[in-house]
Amino acid sequence: MAKLTKSQKAKAATRVLPEEDPEFQIAPMIDILLVLLVFFMTIATDQVMQVNKEIVLPIAKNIEKATPTTSATSEVNVNVIWNMDNTGKIEVDNAGQKDITGLTEYINSKRAQAEEANIKDFKVVIRADKRSKYQYIRTVMVAIGQAKVPHVTFSAVDKELDNKPAAEPQP
Image (cartoon, rainbow, N blue to C red):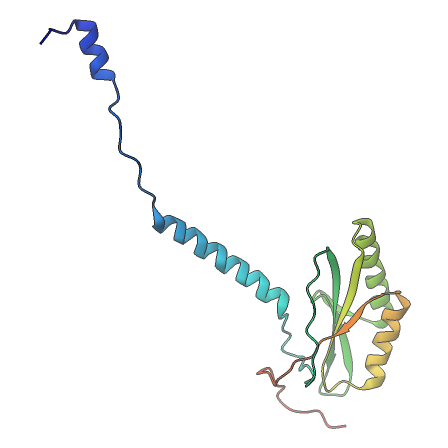
């Protein structure tokens, strides 16, 4: 065997030996996927079932499921809450209480924002308590009509849910 020179020894000492192929670490990947799954489930559940404990939705036997759209949509949720003293109140987008004129103004502003963002599918979802009086819901519908909303949907359930009120109001 030939003797190595000093420079060859230094070069050999600094040379990196070939490493084995790195192994794929599955545990961190699973952790990340589970965090993403929980995140998306939380958001999806919040959007799909926006529950308000004060509202008991009516039961509809022949309920038509909402069809998902592929285009961008803008939506305003109007909660019609019926109180124990036979009075109603309106909550819009879980942001606060509105009166009838405030409802029309709010929907007009949201519709204008949707038009500025070039969103063509604007709709209002009415979530009315099943104990609400027709006359009160009618005034809400008139206010929405004054805002020239092209698409209005009523929320209902196909079976009894657990969010029952403490007691039914007396007429």
